[in-house]
Structure formats: structure tokens, C-alpha cells
Image (cartoon, rainbow, N blue to C red):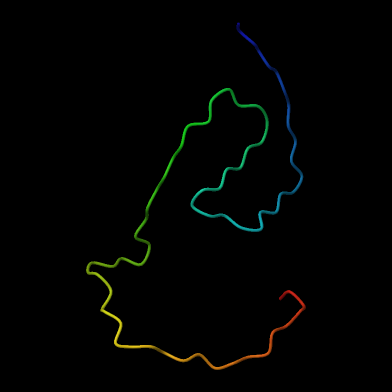
Length: 68
């Protein structure tokens, strides 16, 4: 069965709250969604990070109920 879909989409503004490694943003109709994964070295690192030296203690901070 062949289904042809014609559509026009106008997006005035789009706000994306967060993207994770397994996020999918779909606008419109898709017959097949193929997985895609990209890993970028944006910091220009050439060696692994140094090993952790021990536990660190974070300063306790008040939790704000207002999103910043």
C-alpha cells in the first residue's frame, strides 16, 4: 500500500527545553525514522581525563523552587 502525504508546516517559533542522547524531534509526517548518533569533540581534547583523586564534598545550597 502506497500512501502519499502532502503537507505544509509553518513554524513561527519553536522552543526546545532539552535534548538528550535518545531524543527525537519530529515535525510533520515520517514513514521511516532512522536512528542517528553523532559524537563530537568540541573541546579539542586529545587524551583521557585524569583519574579522580577522591571524594569531593559539595557545599550545601538552598534549593530554589523558582526555575532560573
